[in-house]
Amino acid sequence: MALNGVIMAKTFMDENFLLETETARSLFNAVKDQEIFDYHCHLAPSQIAGNINMKDLTEAWLSGDHYKWRMMRAMGIDEKYITGNGESYDKFLAWTKTIEKLIGNPLYHWTHLELQRYFGITAPLTEKSAPSIWKEANAMLKLPELSVKGIFNRFKIYAVGTTDDPADSLQYHKEIAEGTAPIGKISAKVIPSFRPDRALDLNSDGFAEYVNELSKAGNIKIKTVDDLISVLEQRLDHFIKTGCRSSDHALEYPPVVSVSGNEIENAFKKALRKEKVSINEADSFKARVLTELSCIYAKKDIIMQLHFSALRNVNSKMLNLLGANTGYDAVHDNLISANLAALLDELEKKGLPKTIFYSLNPKDYYPLATIMGGFQNTGVEGKMQLGSAWWFCDHRDGMEEQMRVLANVGMLGAFIGMLTDSRSFLSYPRHEYFRRILCNMIGKWVENGEYPNDMNTLTKIVKDISFENARRYFN
Image (cartoon, rainbow, N blue to C red; front, side):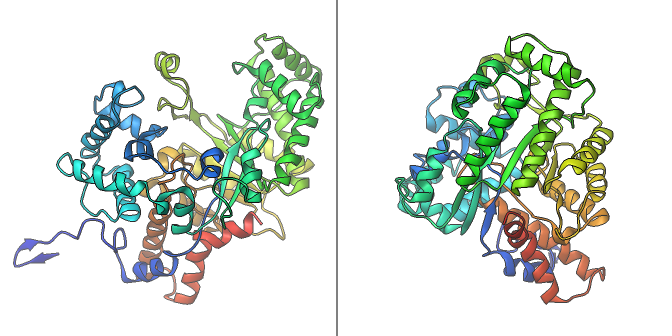
């Protein structure tokens, strides 16, 4: 907008942030106070149970957040101030120095949404404002309102789905559900998700040791593939008793069986002896176990989440120094269509549960959205889902692209919406970010005459995508 020849910029991240039309603003007003169902995240159940207060902004923002670590490395920050033993305030200053360069990056928006929503701080984070923001926010972090329970109440958290190993006792989940944990009685549901990745990868480090761990958890000696599947089903039953509604699998690409059953059995036994097996044997084993698990999920009404196209640990030097999940992953470009169609075809014959597909590579959106259309089912709205833009894609352009593809070749109105996929208790404004982007996109369609300006119908659509569809989908 120009006034007397002077261009007037919009106010920085005000109440109309990302909302470009009147329709968008009206729609966002309808969803901004809805509950949040964060059905896939990596929050630590122990921290929820303990009702922790984060000690300072460095712990809140930089502890375990490889999104931020990557950007700090791009800034040339010494690793001492990223994952090392640098002083907490010095790490915060290093992040502050980094964020001033992140124009156009979602981390810039998320950081400032978090400052606004948790601390009421509207000033941009800069090297100049850093000392006062550090002092003000850290003082507030000590308050009960910013304990885990306080955060859950403030953001109307309906439920969170943590990510848990089959061998886990789920003791913290039980204590939370019973109200015996330090957090006490809470309205939010904290539900485990069944993540059996370590049981499906024959060539992973420590596979044999993990099978022994799983044997102890199931109180059954695992000697065969059938034994493994039996123990996994037993552990899933244990998860279901604690509220589990979904499973989760991280796959570079969809596996298919390409060797005989005897070869799969022999490969499993070789892996137990800590011998390497071929890629075909490992993939066939993974497909066999995944197929059996899919039948079990369908029988027990457990949702199956499949994450594709992450290229893990591309920097072996840093993997050896820092370990996995430290910011050295990337987007994979495997071809997945033929394998996925074959895998789903096999699962459909034996039992295909509700399934959510995510891909780290946007090139997969059209294959995923069109293949899943061949496996929708009578009586279940949106049984097969193209999951929310994930990881490297959960920015404005990525979210819009995922939803536009779904709208173009599927049913956007049945979409189950946003998740944080986060390890941070400060991540809940990402749901607001998503809702603003959703309302803005639909608002522009309406004001361009592409959909009727029927606010009752439009409000139902955005409310469903923001929360209601997920609640129904996960029962």
